[in-house]
Length: 459
Ligand SMILES: Cc1cc2nc3c(=O)[nH]c(=O)nc-3n(C[C@H](O)[C@H](O)[C@H](O)COP(=O)(O)OP(=O)(O)OC[C@H]3O[C@@H](n4cnc5c(N)ncnc54)[C@H](O)[C@@H]3O)c2cc1C
Image (cartoon, rainbow, N blue to C red):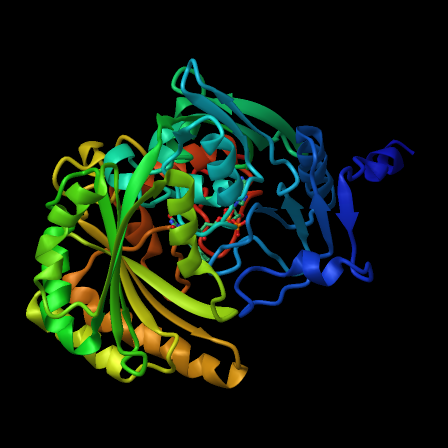
């Protein structure tokens, strides 16, 4: 009898979607349509208690679980066949305390909403560009964006996280991690990667005053690649930390190179600062203007809209500019790209007084502090007939660039990377395993590239 009562166990609460429900198909899909997984249930949590119940429910039944916020995982780590998806996207309150210059942000917020709510108080959190990326995945993996060089990564501004973790053999509980309590868990939530330790429900971030910013965009023809790319690589990490910039080289059939950036300063200063870029090759289109910060977020978000639905992306860090041979590799691969949607993208991160580089590689779980730039090699497609070739192209491209770049960003995960612990975490992997052992000894939060519990697995 007692056994039976135990089995009835915890009930799921929140908005529950099951196979057969009308909304099931929309509810199960990831942003990357390369994946199509069929969970046994999806629960849209509205309160922390819904998250606790869902974790308990899964543990009592031995059902695999995944945390989900914005669904933007490149390798669909937030979806699972036959398991439960614990979705926090309906937990999306934002509260700004302008006196203390902090924002309380629930973990289900997409970035556009965070930017907007913070803008109402004329403050900003350095975060990513895509409007519908979730703040949870972004923060726990790092969080790079157009304010990074001045204000650091999103995770560098994280003061506190509230998380539902597994407890005992079948339970779940909430803990609050900050510098004073559970400081190891706070550390691990600053770049250790989403989904590894528990389900974050609430973040407290340091925020920064913001008003107008200046933005630029410069377009060149592809034939300028050898002039523009090396110039940008030398310039971007050496310019003032108030300026963060990107460069994207499109497939040869598109034939463009575009650099964009944002300055905390005026248009006149920005025009002066981008002079070295304007003198490289022959720009065919130049835009410089001063806009309210919220408008700048929309400008950068545009690059992440209307993309092909399926993709394979890999990332890497540049600790120094690519030599000529590296640029030749970019030319070679983009000359034979699988289609017109393949690109190489890079963003400045470190260098001259950058807030990212000022932090020690072991101060947070994000170790790539001394990198000057980050790269993405991307293939996107719609038709399945293009899939195999596109994935192979990314794989070969990554291999060819290996001598010149280092590691990968855990928020650009790539299942093809065999030594992913080293690539994502470097020196911090050992400590991450210790944190895992403490907060998730039964390995409840696991997926293809989750941090392992290791040898001293708790009973
Ligand atoms: C179009 C696009 C643009 C991007 N732009 C940027 C950018 O500008 N800067 C940048 O740094 N990155 C960027 N990224 C990468 C992005 O940071 C990662 O994909 C990130 O993991 C997405 O988080 P999510 O919450 O949307 O995804 P999800 O798929 O929901 O989650 C990602 C991971 O976090 C876990 N997770 C989700 N919610 C929680 C939670 N509440 N608690 C604990 N773990 C959780 C999941 O289980 C999964 O492992 C971009 C990605 C895309 C697809």
